[in-house]
Amino acid sequence: MENQTLLWVITASVAMAGLSMFFQMVAMFGLYRQVKAMQEKVLPLIPRAESLLEHARATVETTHAEIKQISAKTHQILDSTRDQLSRVEEVVSDASSRAKIQLEKAEFVLDDTMSRVHETVAVLQSGVLKPLKEINGLVTGVRAGFGTLFSGSKRPSVVNATQDEEMFI
Image 1 (cartoon, rainbow, N blue to C red):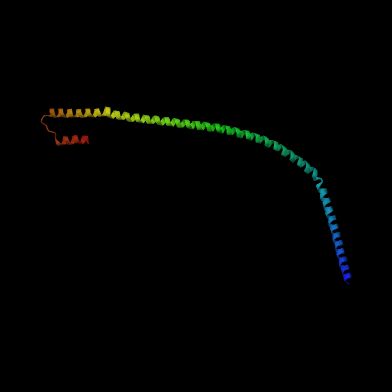
Image 2 (cartoon, rainbow, N blue to C red):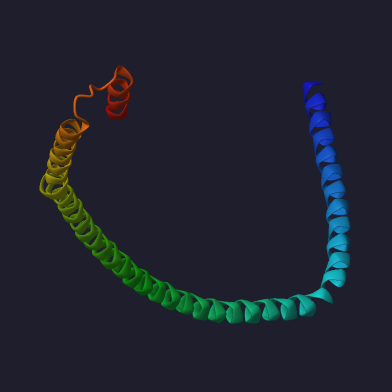
């Protein structure tokens, strides 16, 4: 019986393997039909895809050439801009140094002028105004002397003395 059971188990296994192979064959046949149907749908698209790829390749090549030209022109522009900026920097630096020198000269001239003005004011004070004050004091003294001499015995009143003092205040 053991052999009989083993024989039945092996037979069942072979039958199941056969059935699974049959179902695999059916599935593969269905897959084959689907692939054929898809191939029939895709085949008309292949020439269009190839022309599209050719057009894309041509566009990429054209774009690549134009990008090279633009890159070359951009490098020229950048080089020109760099040169011009260096020239502008030189001009600004030169103008800045010249302006600094001119400001120093103007400051020197202003300082010299101010010192001369102070000297002139000092000379004017000591040379012109001081003698004028002395002459004014002398004239005032002479006038007071003549006033006293010609007024006779009149004594100045308190009102005149107060008025004279107020004039000096």
